[in-house]
Length: 544
Image 1 (cartoon, rainbow, N blue to C red):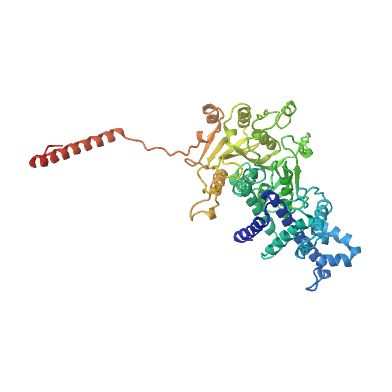
Image 2: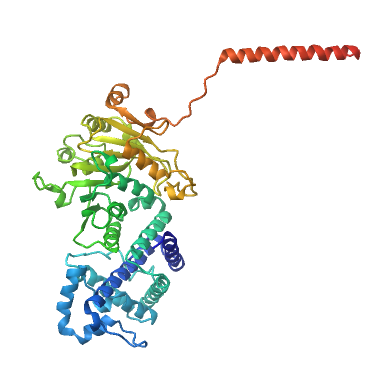
């Protein structure tokens, strides 16, 4: 799908959402809209696989027969259904009963069937509990089909659902579909809903431009990025994964077979469900990812609590955009936690370093971690200074990247990207000050790619990546700084402007030259006055 087609499809779906949500909050309507897209995606893929599997046995229906071909086959071949579904599970990793396929749901919506609402409820439960070998319990838990926001009576709610589903089906039918179409549309809609959610969007969305920077950094060779991309990442972790777009961006950089296993964690239940749907919508099998619903700082995921070093989860890439300056409660138990014990606890007023240390603990020796944090982590004192100092002394901070302000929906402050490694090649720290490189927007500023720039200019994103990859130095943009300078001159303060200032150097002024020019001017003024007064004398007028 071309960018133009995607934008047109996304706009079409967004217009549907804008037209139909009525008095419903945009965040609430998002859950309905995205869930129906998800159902459409699963159904299309399942029906295509079933048609291929059955071959000539796949029923061909008359034009006026409104049943689905698969429903007819299920009815006519009851005894063969278990074997057929077993085969589809091996190939597709899931099954959907014909009653709950999108085409069946749409037919009920098109005909204003009074049973639509009940059919949807049964269908969602079926997908949660029976479709996949691994359970997806609660996948649609935030979809309240009996909410009065849809209508005050069951009939009103049923009618509203009929309208929404019919509109989505009719508008999507206008576009040619490919395997990535609905996944891309899903991402587009998440971005649009994030734009409308303002500060709440920080809970689930990282702008694609920033996501691309992190993804491209962690997929480069960790020891020497100049060697180019890694061929494969065995495990990738995002411990504050939101809707999962950052994890999917890492996968996109290396292709569908370039990542072995994806791990994500999300505290918000609604966003947790978005992430699981997003993975499946982008063609991932349920055996290729694990998304955990839980509190990262409490580390309540059993998988991450393995104390045996031989069984510990170690990831080739760790990416994250955790909540900025999050207030948290810690105690003596957490002080002894294996993630923090060697570094100390982040202050209660700002958990930024707690998030960083959590992810860093699960980074492999050959891996790269890229995390988005507020600038305060670079210079704040107290406990944060102690953590920052130890990370620097141990040689774990590789690169500090300063980004422009107002890139995020959730905050207007400028943020930074910290790149960390457990075993790094270079004994200096690369500072990149990209704060002045952006396109100003009405609501948010944007980082542009090269193909969005005037001809001959490198994109803001590519400039950052190119500077990181080849460790380039450029006046007022990037500089490699020795540990000696960081320690002796700056006491481990990483404030970017100390090392890379964007201020223009003022031209030196030659005071002797200025004085000579002033004297020459005074002489010319005196001569002009003398000549002028001679004319006035001839006219018998008083001199000036």
